[in-house]
Image 1 (tube, helix red, strand yellow):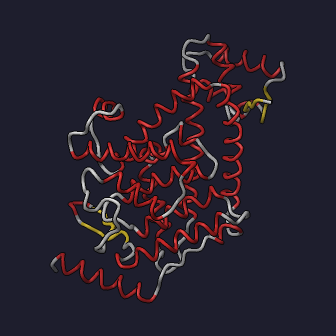
Image 2 (cartoon, helix red, strand yellow; image 1 turned 135 degrees about the horizontal axis):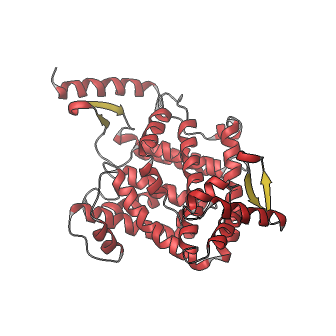
Image 3 (spheres, rainbow, N blue to C red; image 1 turned 90 degrees about the horizontal axis):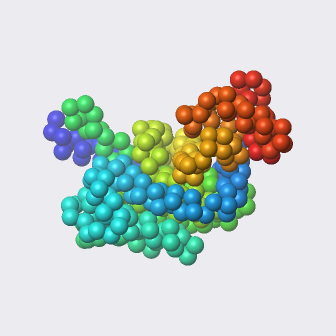
Length: 367
């Protein structure tokens, strides 16, 4: 059967289904339907954020270096997910203001500008249709000006390419004629949820992003716009980890898990029976990972010239999560286990560290 005819038949089936079902945007389930592991991880992340606030005040210069590194990695990582790449040297040039030459460099330049605006003006911004369209316009104004900042006018598919180029419809987004209404409903549901003191703003983020991607309001650039919105929403939830560690880089490193979580959570979305939990869990793990990476980056930047014993002490005292001997050795491969044990023993005697667990499972945390 001809491929175009197959797509027409598939589209007709989806259309028939969606005439019967329309997604209802409602995040009230976040109040009482959250598994214990998600609630626990949310609490851990909130605690890490509080500890990080204290360390940030103590090491201003180190955090500024992390900020400069993170924005480059974010621009590179988010575009790489979509297959938009250039050389390391050109990334550096573009970040420093060089004019883009190729189509991919124009796309990268657009993301740089949009991300910079969020980092500098997030405290003045809100998640609105105008904000979303403006971010999209910044992304595509150099490459697709006729579509930049404008919702799609034609229905689109999210396709998956299998072996030998075989296509599969992975998801059918909202129809073009329904985009305005769905975006209104999405935002109203978000506003209602963020005013509810029983709903965690951190858990609201992945639900909003998932629904945005299911609407797929633009012809192109939806993925990159969703990651810009994710950064903005993380800021708005009271977390500035996105300023110092690139969420986009981590997502790119775990992009297969990202797509698996998306697929699992979008199944039966049109019928209002999808499960947000897989994507919520993926998002929380990414945020947790970002705090772990912050520890590693902090060590790399701030302790390069320190003595071995000083580096062990700094790693142990500045770890925002309980740390083991093995993890310290991983961070400091040139330091012997004897040195690590000697420093940890001294810090425990000086009442600067507490021990959690015993023997091989022992972990150390600052008092």
